[in-house]
Amino acid sequence: MNIYDLPLFKKMQREYKREFGIDIASFIKPKPVVVDFKSFEKKLLNKKQRKVLLDIEKNNQNKVILSGGIASGKTFWLVIYS
Image 1 (tube, one colour):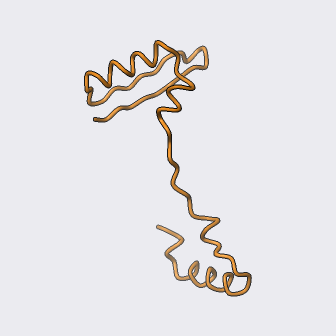
Image 2 (cartoon, rainbow, N blue to C red):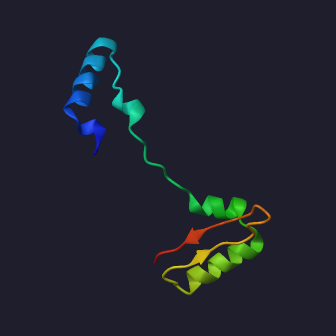
Image 3 (spheres, rainbow, N blue to C red):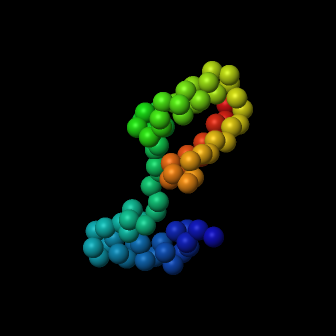
C-alpha cells in the first residue's frame, strides 16, 4: 500500500501547501540514487580486484557474485548481469 496515494495524504498535502506554501511530498518521497560504479571501482577496489572485474567483463559473464576479506573488513559483493 502506497500511503502517498491515499485520499487523506492528498488532502493533508493540499492543506499544508495552501497554508505554508511547501509540498510535504518533496520531503517524504524517496529520491532516486545514481551510483557511479566506475568511481567506486577506482576508489575502493585494489589492483587484483579490478583485474578480476576486467576479466569478467572481457569474458561477458552472465552472473557473478564475488565476496572476500570478511575478516579484514574489506568485503565486496558484486553481481554483474549482461
